[in-house]
Length: 301
Ligand SMILES: CCCCCCCCCCCCC/C=C/C(=O)SCCNC(=O)CCNC(=O)[C@H](O)C(C)(C)COP(=O)(O)OP(=O)(O)OC[C@H]1O[C@@H](n2cnc3c(N)ncnc32)[C@H](O)[C@@H]1OP(=O)(O)O
Image 1 (cartoon, protein in one colour):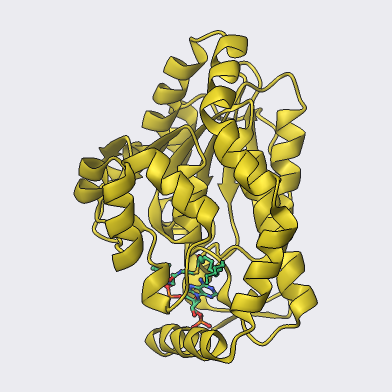
Image 2 (cartoon, helix red, strand yellow):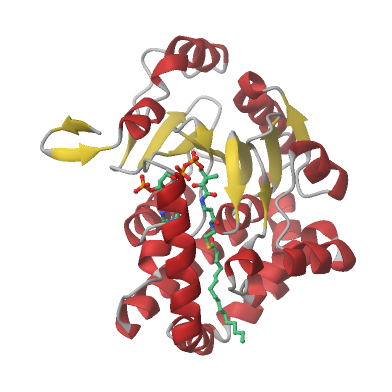
């Protein structure tokens, strides 16, 4: 453990945050991508936004060590950043990526799902719904630059984007592993999977809780490109350029036509979905399963 500003922060988290070891390489990649000196970053504690106004693109980086698990705070900050970018006519696209090395997002923060009150579970689930609806229906082009592991809720974030580029590294697994924890993905996550990989592949992956290594993720259609780790962001920006070559109004109407029926299934029944989650996660058996899984993770660490 290292001590920083009175906080106990695991040394590996410090190493990940900002990717110290790869700082120089990343600075080079940023310069190559046009995000060098002079560009003003903004954002919040857990979400870093690197705008490139000339290109109309913002790179949105998750930076919530150690593993970008989707805490209530991270969900809230991400919604606020996305709303800001959505409402700013300067921007036509976002690249969603991680500021940590080796992890895109560990999915839902399990500490938010264990030993809390029903009111807390409800607040948490509403925040997750809000993020999903905003990202899934965003008028911006969204490209996920998946530079690390992306299980469960992390996978959902990626699936909500328009295009996915995954780093070619054995640690960069992606998929819906919920059943392995003894929990169930919500229907809107299932719908996203089906829309992306088709019914049969989604059914298998969801039931088996499959975490796909990069080549398999590409084969099944869960991601659109697999590239060497150091080319993830530049490839995402190149993909962005192709998407931005299309007039916004035509692309946005088409996106809405493709996605609105899926989003509406949740939008029309949000409160029932909250109640279903609260009663599911409050069950003793689910609490035990989540607690056991969390303890195993901690022991491993
Ligand atoms: C009847 C039907 C009704 C249905 C109604 C709907 C019901 C809905 C049910 C709810 C389900 C919703 C869907 C759930 C989605 C999810 O996202 S669940 C979370 C799934 N995530 C995972 O399984 C990932 C777990 N983590 C890992 O595998 C690894 O951490 C990693 C991401 C691959 C990174 O590995 P590594 O770099 O080796 O780091 P670690 O040492 O493992 O971890 C560092 C610390 O981080 C803690 N941590 C890891 N993941 C999480 C997490 N998700 N939440 C909270 N904390 C996490 C880990 O414990 C370590 O902590 P310390 O030891 O204290 O440092």
